[in-house]
Amino acid sequence: MDYAPGVEPCPLPYSPFKSCTVPRPIGWLSTLSRDGVHNLAPYSQWQNLTYDPPMVMFAANQHTDGRRKDTVINAEDTGWFVWNMATYALREAVNLSSMALASGEDEFDHAGVTKEACTDAPGYRVAESPAHFECKYIATHRLPESTAGGFVDVVYGQVMRIHVRDEVIGTDGKLDIPKIEPIARMGYYDYTVVRDVFEMRIPNASQAEADGLEGKS
Image (cartoon, rainbow, N blue to C red; front, side):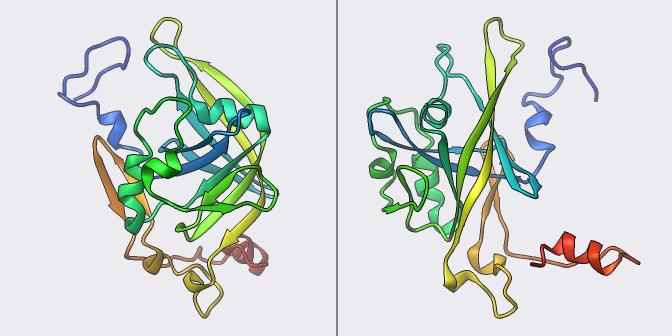
């Protein structure tokens, strides 16, 4: 099976593109509007970009009626957005926050999660989440979609503050990922949860290279 997306019809009933780059981490992002409305929404096009300084990105498709996502607008207006780690225990709240609500509605309340004040960013983070990034907005890159007049907003930010709950830090000083149970997108309506972890070290790497890859401070 092969085909050219956008040129030839997909020979499968569901696009394989959505389930090849997997698992995809979830950008569960909280923002504040210029009018003081709190927003919370998950994005599966989310990724780290680099670590010195720590930078991240997320991509947000427009609504079907052409409106831009509130998360993008809020990040541009306030200069901040906050990442909250999505976990298996919070999966239902993550799913509820994905609903398309009116701009004036508070997704924290709709998802049934608790607001916790940030240190630098305006607005709140999800208190039940075990880890957070407070991200300073850098720029938005608008990419055209195949649909006429459609765009996807790619938003870049620098991580200015990191919060981690003490109870999810192991005795070795690393995050206890199996205990946290982060969830990730698998495409379609499918998700996965991280419970199994294995280690692979690069053969013959220098100590500096090994320390850099491991994030040793």
